[in-house]
Picture 1 (tube, rainbow, N blue to C red):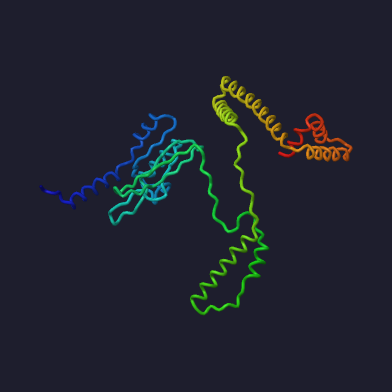
Picture 2 (cartoon, rainbow, N blue to C red):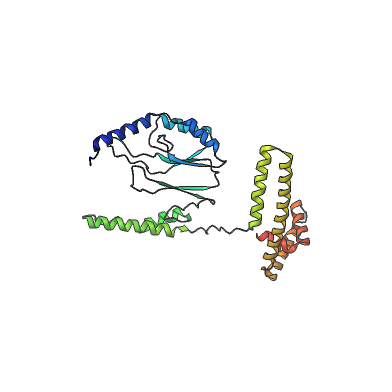
Length: 304
């Protein structure tokens, strides 16, 4: 059994790769593929093209591909780390494996480089989510609102300059003490903001009607067909009716939780404020009318 010459095999592989790189980018074939797909599509491949949008440099194939992406209103989803790891000493790691897609912006995407050393190209994994990913809060030593005057005074009182710095141990201890003083002063001078409440007050049915109404409005604004306008008006009126019922139920639910003495005190205070003004402005008259007709709901509206 005769084994092939390894050096000649590598030379042939390098020649084929160089010929593939010099070959122009097949924009026509890619255009036919995009036209044959459905409205929403994702294309992932080893495009063997370089552009600064997804790569560390730019070549002719990359410019052609970028022009194709721009003309067809597509977007690139590429990994931040390289996906091509050449064995040649004169070549650098680069990103050749990525995705082009026309996914709507409401879908969140995350690409992960699996770093599998099976070949000179590492596989990538694309994750698509229907909900946008929550933005992670940046690490900070001053959470909330910081009173910088108090921070300056605290640092001035705690910092001592008459310390010895004769040895490495003394320097390390001084650095540790200064760091600890800065962190404690920052925490003592900061006021923690209340956490953001992500409580959703709308029911799934209302959310579905809101989404349908927005789609109908967008379609009517694009086509201006009478049938689309009728559908949009129907969904809009239906949504207004559902929101009115939802608000009424919310008022009743919150009203049952309000103590009667507290409600009476708030009502008396509002009436006394209106009587002192003597002259009824439109705003005061509306408040007075709502208070007489719907006193319980008026108090709840002011609380919400």
